[in-house]
Structures are given as C-alpha cells and as structure tokens.
Length: 139
Image (cartoon, rainbow, N blue to C red; front, side, top):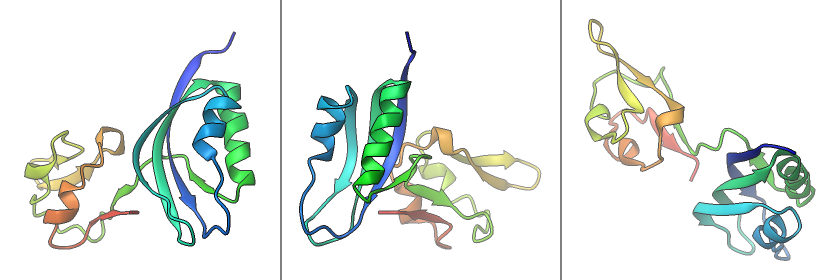
C-alpha cells in the first residue's frame, strides 16, 4: 500500500486548437484530489494552472505522464514566484510585506536578504513593492 502524497505543480499550456478536460482526467482516471490555486487557461492563448494534486505516488506519476502527453509543461517546483539574488539590492522593502517570512533577513550583520521557497504562499506582495525587480512571477 502506497503512501498518500501531495505535490504542488505549475502547468504551462501551449496554444490549443482544442480543449482537453485535464482536471477531470486527473480526478476520474488517476484518482487524484485536485486543489486549484490560480489559473489562466484560455483557448488560442498560452496559459498556466497552479495546483496541488494529492494521491498515491504511482497515480501521481501516471498523471504526470498523461499531462506531458497533452503537450503541457510541468514545473515540479510548483512555484510561480522567483527571487533573483543578483538583482536584489538587499534594501529590505520586501521583508515587511512578506506574510510568511519567505523573504527574510538572513544575516542581521550584513542585512542580506534570503528567500525560502518552501515558505512562499505566492501572495505576490513582494513583486508589487520590489523597486529592483528581484521578485518575479511566472504569471
């Protein structure tokens, strides 16, 4: 008996001439529980879908193969927010706006900022306040 797992994924959809019922197939054919966080999937346009899938490890693996067969790119890190340390001026503007401390002062002596991807909830507050564009979204 396999352990139940939850994986956060970001799916990137190419332009489609036809629509695929991907979420339906994940639930019905692959026995997964799906929780959609954010989506933009429009016919004739590129799109994305941020979701959690929960289920048996083998079911998740089979579902990933199905998704890839639909010409969908899967980002397994599951994060749509990124932080570029080289663009960051370590001004701390983002730190006060980050509700989970994903962006935080790692070294008080140097005031160096660090990003903990696992703590990020993708609220996008950092993107709005960063004057240097160090925080970015795939969306």
